[in-house]
Image (cartoon, rainbow, N blue to C red; front, side, top):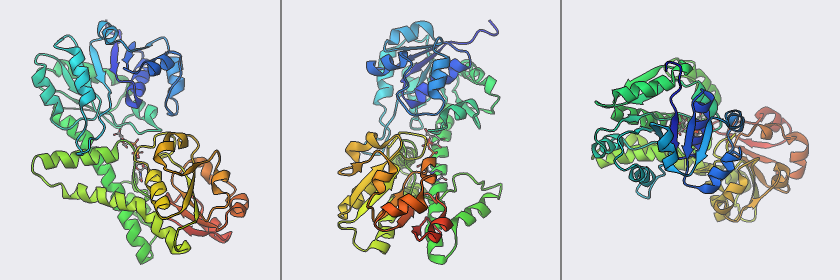
Length: 426
Ligand code: UGA
């Protein structure tokens, strides 16, 4: 029994669910992963991974024998006792999290007490307590995920910490969940359910705060003649501050930070507390996404009739996710100003077709740049650093103006070659 691995159930095979399933299979567990979308399950069963996540297709292929994809909940319930809930909890219009998919899972489970729920989906603080009230005598563990898109497999296998939240009556399940992660040799934070839920939201909110903070330092640095890159480096060497998430840019996006910061603010608001700091973090981010327009106008005057190339659609590199991406805001704003917009992204552009308005989706960076009055680097895909800026790009542009939204390009080289360069906070 000692080295027999616990079979794992995964409910919801989106990005979190698939990474969780593949990584537990890699750790030697039989995994039954269930999704309600038949096409997704069929393609996974054929070994096709429907999302862009480095290392994931290989992991799914390597562990095909241990990974069982199904649409049938009964199959999962038959083979497993620990069910990792990985369904999405998108924001509603009110800014609260939409828990309808979690509710559907609960409905399907009915009052079966044999199966313990392990909540990986990000849920409002208090959700676990309310589920436990409705399912007395059933195991419940909060086990939030801290995976970054584009680095999720490595984040799962080498986590900074594992958080396991359980209330009275579920400590046996908490031990079982903690044991699953033992091979990863990471610190395990064992706590109550509400605190585990809060650790997740507070971590994302803090990281978003760091980004909005450095973006404001960048904006002020532009006025005062400082260079935010130098400032962030100097700040980050202080161990109390740390160097990570101090990269100034054109705002954070993705499916997590915008949603979770809003959800935490809303959650506080529901208790009558006005979380002023998070209100500012959100507003700074919204404005940061739009500041590029002013930078373009500074050099081009009116944008009416101008052609602008957006390099990058994904909210960050190494993902095809475009949720809350700055590219979407910029595309809309630029067209609102009368500019024509061309976009290119190595993997994500087609995902954004309907949300990019009338922007022309291009098959290469060169096509996007051809005849442009300005290029905006939105996503720091490595291939954008390797373009022949000095030769071909400059020759193809009508006006050699670059707004480097990620401080990613070689400023000195571009300026030397005759480009007008606008970075962030430099
Ligand atoms: C984020 C967290 O980093 C994960 O720990 C968490 O598990 C995940 O949300 C989630 O809740 O599921 P993710 O959204 O994948 O992960 O991406 P990040 O790498 O954190 O980047 C988020 C955004 O912040 C991106 O738009 C990125 O460009 C921006 N960013 C990040 C900056 O503008 N500056 C930085 O210094 C770092």
